[in-house]
Length: 499
Image (cartoon, rainbow, N blue to C red; front, side):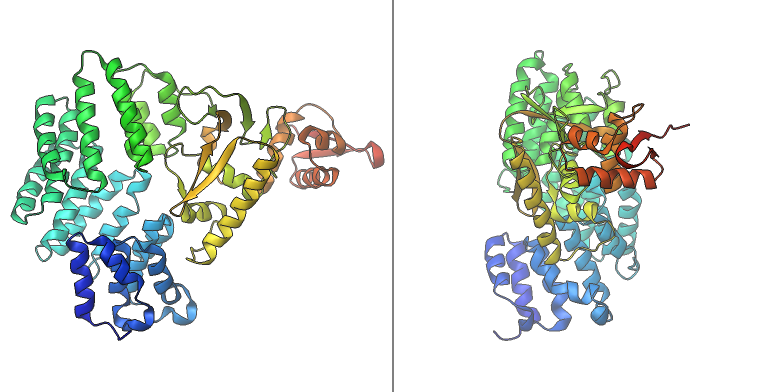
């Protein structure tokens, strides 16, 4: 294939802007790096990211951004687009570290991209000054990009309940969207106006805004049309004299959202149900299944009458699901206390990670960052490494006949329940990256606190080999957690007192 010109890349850009995503993907998939001028790599990566070809973009730029011998060849534009691709695959922390190295004065998109790396963690308040700064930097030179930033800023203001400023910005942005004939973004702005009106319990204004949003988004094949449906249903639910009868409709949409992989729609529908129905179990499911502290604080402030769940929460796939079997994920044991995964090793830590969020699957990049802190994402090696751990976990769970499946799709992993069972986790530990030694120590220190025991007692209690029991005991002795008493066959151990 001949070297592509800027005109060829502009033609692909036009395909994307006009909605011909499939055609653009087919064209981009046929292009190899040898068909491009080096100066066009960043632009090509941008086209790949906009059509969902994230791994191809990462493979293109990784050697220049990450390999020392080629790092001098990475332009700021390369690093900017590489960071954006990392965000799309879920490597948020690594992306932010790259973006902070770029100068907003010369590359203002670094500010916008940073907000994209914050919102998946519900850090909307932090995006507000970044978006304001971005609008200052781009001025009037890029009106469409400015409008995108205003939509995102309005969303953050609505979420953080800066109502007056949100209303003013929404009015300005709607006028700008109409002037640019940006119907899709105008629909999104009307949807945000509906959200603001609902938060203020102004149901008439919400109804008007949702009518406009539905009209503008009715032909959209993206999630925004589903969002408009959600808010329409929420409006009817909040207005209804019989909210319990409307709950079934919200749950049907919840099922649809999960089938379409719109995880946050499902999460928010559970959140909305609590506004009019006393559902402590739904509150507990939402609280324990949403591991971000910002979201949990929002729940507490919104529903102060709901009791916080017990530290140990039994996840059974859905709120109020009845479970037959029980497994302690933190300890890696079954209901009889027998170890079913190799405690503290990467398969066990992966299982803990997959039980943090009940709604959203974990991306391979997120999993890698959690299991191997400090390692940079590699588009080839990282997925292979994670999948090797997945295979080990699947094998251990199958051997123990745990009725769950580790499902993978679209570069993400999640737990699927073959039949209801209780996966017991301690939600207070969701944010902790416990080491192998710490995880192995917990059942020993808990089970034998106040009692003397021998290595064979530990082996029997956890259903592990004697050599594994001795290894764990030696680590705990070295770390000062256990005290060794006696010698030879009479050697025994006891947990060291906290005092």
